[in-house]
Image 1 (cartoon, helix red, strand yellow):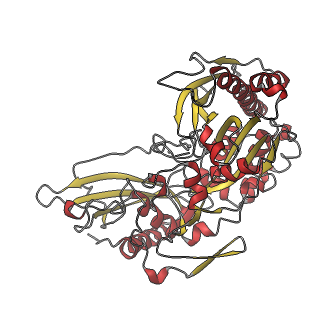
Image 2 (cartoon, rainbow, N blue to C red):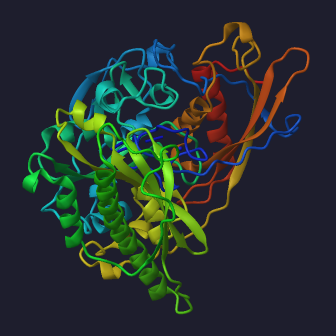
Image 3 (cartoon, rainbow, N blue to C red):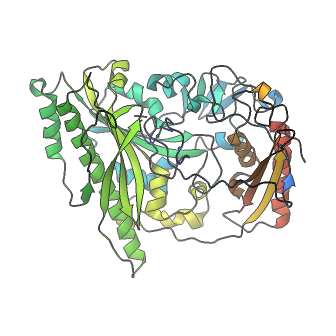
Length: 521
């Protein structure tokens, strides 16, 4: 199934990103859910602060249709003719927009790295889905076709998820997957088991802050029943028989809404009877409740081991009606934890078109998606998503041996907090762009904040903690627009000197000029 954007695993970008951003809120499910995230607060002032460095910038529009090739975001001379990903060679074209810093991460596969928090989280989730029913797929290649990533899931040609401002393209028809749901159609078509779990690294151009990273990990799962294989063809009875085999739990669950609603959460009446949809939903909810109880029980145990004053509170779970393009009815599962309701995952009854398009029209079932970093940050209390990519032993050694004994799981202990060093960069948007005030040249690829974020990441990498828009101003006479961003430089491994921060910042400024065609003010 492919979630701010995805229904397969926490993963697909179907709705404007979370709050609209991407991964640390919990619904990271490919075509299924809004990948999770917190919207970085945006402050609009009347004019740029006097201390801002002045720079002008260009990028593409948030609307992002992808029906015709946009101009390259980097000069042609900087584009390699071919690239290699995990031992395979691919030819690039004018769509190519993958920075070397992102390519370098394609082989890391944190979800398979022994005793890494992402791998531990994957293991905990997998433990609630027996291998006899749910086949594991953890080694799918990250390079997929646009057919796999978009077309097979029904993404319209002008969907924002197809835009180069959102997605890393190798060429016009080949990209780094944006969600695990890119493998959903192939997995349904193979029909190798009654269920599956897919875990993988996924890639998205996004903002820079402590909860977003251009590479993260998702898991999606599905359970299906075949009308032609169940006893007497009674799929409802077969589903309830399987439900009766699942364990129970004693956690309080709030589920006040009906199993389906004609307007809010419709039944696929042309394909499913109400009894069939309700049976699928019942199996789905029990399965995912058991998974969430396991995750948060271990989180509470880890907290109690490290804090003798830890006060336990009963776990509460609730189901919330939702909308995802590839499930109906659909829900989000929320957990009350440490005084707040947290969105953990998205799920639903699979749209029957997915099975029909995969040549399995006789099947029906459910799917869910979840973001592994999102859960790992809650489970281990890891405050900054950049830490997952650290090779610092002060980080990694804290989790040694956990996969061989989950009772050793404990919260992350910060090993240092280095001071921040922020720098402002202020600029006019290009007067030749629609975003800069020239509406006569409107272009969907005209300006996008993600282009600026990519320049910052490409220059300074993990030395940047976050980038925030601090000010924007439109000149009353010329209509030109000025913007000011604050870049917060903070290394995870050492204290940056002001000179080092200045060097990074100057290279960012020059990168904006060279790659985005800005004019420095």
